[in-house]
Image 1 (cartoon, rainbow over the protein chains, first blue to last red):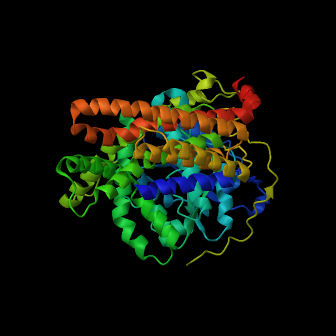
Image 2: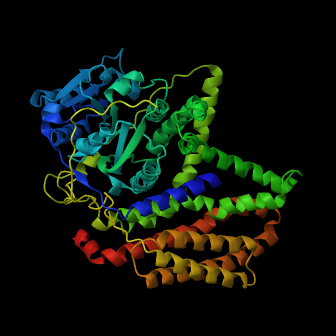
Image 3: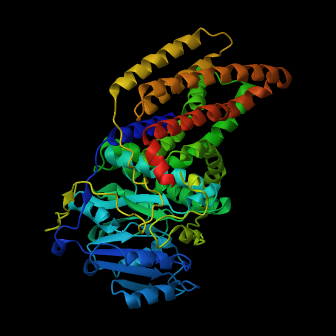
Amino acid sequence: MIAYLVRHYIFTLAVLKDAGKKKEAVSLGNRARLPSVSILIPAFNEELVIGRLLQRMCELTYPVDRLQILVIDDASTDSTGKIAEEFSKLHSQIEVLHRSEDEGRRGKASALNAGLNFVKGEIVLCFDADYYPQRDIVEQLAKEFEDPRIGAVQGRVTVLNEPENIVTRLVALERIGGYRIDQQARDRLGLIPQFGGTVGGFRRDLLKSLGGWDESILAEDTDITFRVYLSGYKIRYVNEAECYEEAVESWRAYWKQRYRWARGHMQCAFKHVFQVLKSKNLRFRERLDALFLLNVYFMPVFVLFSWLISIPLLFLGPPPWLSLGWAAGVFSVYSFVGNFAPFFEVGIGAYLDGRTRAHWLVSLLVFTFLYNIPICTKALVDLLISKASGRNSVPWDKTIHSGNGNSYITKENGYKPKTLRCGMI
Amino acid sequence: MRHSSPVQGWIFVSEKRRERPDCVGGLTYEPIAMGDQKLELRSSHIVLGFLVAAVFSCAILFLHDVSNESVFMLTAFNLLFVSLTFLLNGSLATKVLLLSIGNIIGVLWVLLFSMFIRTVANYLGAAFNGLYLILGPFVNLVWIVTFFSLSLTVLANAKTGKQGLKLDN
């Protein structure tokens, strides 16, 4: 816990130090020499949001003749495939891959692997169906591949439906901390920025040499992050490549999503931790950060465990080998400092984003932290049980999108929020 | 370590920072989501901030009825507050004022809370220690994180007051 708090603190300071520097924008340069890019969009029953994304894909500033947009209709039962087909008839860069019921509905990784067989571009980007990217996002992401050491890139995710309710507002704050500070700091400090599964991409050849995505892992993005690093490449985080997502809107949906992330992350921890320790392609600091990243979803479980053992210790008295003074010191550091570091990180991230009132909700993140304790505990217990029983396959519990994010986008110049504008600040 | 050779002929020309692109179809949804808050890092603010924080921390040591844990907590608050907020935009006077208010609130909180703990512990006995161990951090979080958040609002508004009004309209 102390190590994590120090890490949060260092990350916040690293980003603050970087905040004063100007960022240079990019333009398309010589059109004839731009890399060809394929965009994969896996979609299962996304009729409420897929149209919005595809319309946005048609508005990208990247040359159409260098772009391939492949929608993978994963045996949807709604009109997702139909909507995608209509777009593909009007726009030559859009293609649709329909998967049958026998082939499909096996999770995002499976859908992406199916699409990988049809990509033509030198660079492969991925977007989830509920996302809404900025128009120059392809250039922002693709430029990083000029560096031959870079095997993958990750852009920034911002919440589109933030004013919807308290859940979306808290998720938005989490995103600010996770991307504006965490990912940014890891990129600047030469650590391990993570590919987040969307708003990012890879060199096609690297992806194919890695065998695509691992379909047995729920967090296929974390898994491929480590496989990229273990193969000798790096991942670059691009904060200027911004894309909006439709965040979960209920605590139930939040549970399902985070359970999937936690369990998948833990699967990756079991799979990669020893490889990370032994890898010659990672520097010491990368190895250290990799261990932090792999074990992050175990922390809520450790907190619960520490609470459970501390109470009987107080009644029974500590064993001789555990000095009460030392234990009190550790508990004190955790109690009075450790659990504040993530909040400070999020607060600074919101400040750097120019927010003036979003900070007021930062202290409410304690509830999401508490909520994550049973989520991660259940994920770990289920994982251990499945490992013991030999049942490794887990059904993909997809996040349901309501399409409410559509109401935050208007065709006119100007944002018309559903709530008061102050709710957005 | 393997590297692929750079793909021949890719050109991405950097140019001077242009106006913020319309991220989401021309609308002004979250105008500063791209992190446009420019910082002017002032090391003098940090140094003075730590000096002031040291004065407060020493003063707290002389207070009666303040436990060691509370002293440690207030010292940690001063350290984190100075090292993070004194780097931000805003006048030194504002930052020192916020730090002072934070320490006053912290001391008052500690004194009130310690009175509460003593009273409750008299009734609940040893069982209360366990309860305090678990709930204590969250109780302290109420004032520390909340105060930090409000301070960020004050500092953000100090520089961007006019701009904030423009965004609101």
